[in-house]
Image (cartoon, rainbow, N blue to C red; front, side, top):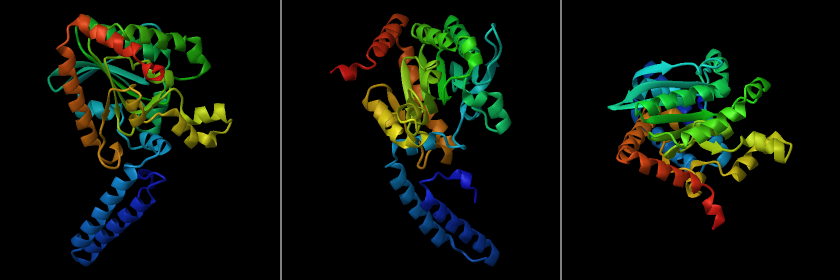
Length: 320
């Protein structure tokens, strides 16, 4: 049984899956029908998953968001976007593989896709720096978004990064400036922008493609000014306090919805997106199509004004 499928708090699920696998194996070996027993254990597993995933702590949600088999941007491109054509380079330095940009269709809707790319295999992860963009990634993203604006094409961004690359070479190429420019420019692009946190939403790395008319999160994603480990290292000088930090950061979709920082929480299948990739992407696709229909009804002036008011309202809950 593949232990990578399971998270530390899923011990009971491991045992139930083991029982199901053994019964199926015995059924083949002895030609005996164990389907009744398998169904009984399966119902028990569903009940246990429901119990676990309806009471996850903030730290457990971070673990779910980081699951190795959780769908990444390439899964969304393969299963949701038709006729995708990648666009490359920032015309200044190079092509950062940590951010993918390109044109495609979601059903009948033409869109510009911009998203963080974490890769699947170790080789891919290393090539795209584990989803941590350099400045040229953010400059590439903005260049393609301005291209979309020129031709009236809506923009959909997929956020999935532990943060922007913190290395000295990134700072030498003006990492903070690249992100800051994106924040300012995205706030006034004259086309609809939908931003979706699909797994990790870490710090300025997430913000660099996260300004838009709607900000949605998958149910077990997280969005935070800093990683729990980074927060623990700063506040307690002890990375083992990450669980305590995760709770304090209010980084879950439920917390952020209450704070008014995200607009919608997109539900995930029972047990998280990694257990049912197709249904997760179906839910995301439906949200995008529904939201695009709403935003495209607005005139440009109204779209920009609503976006401005939305951004100005961030943090207002703390002023009451």
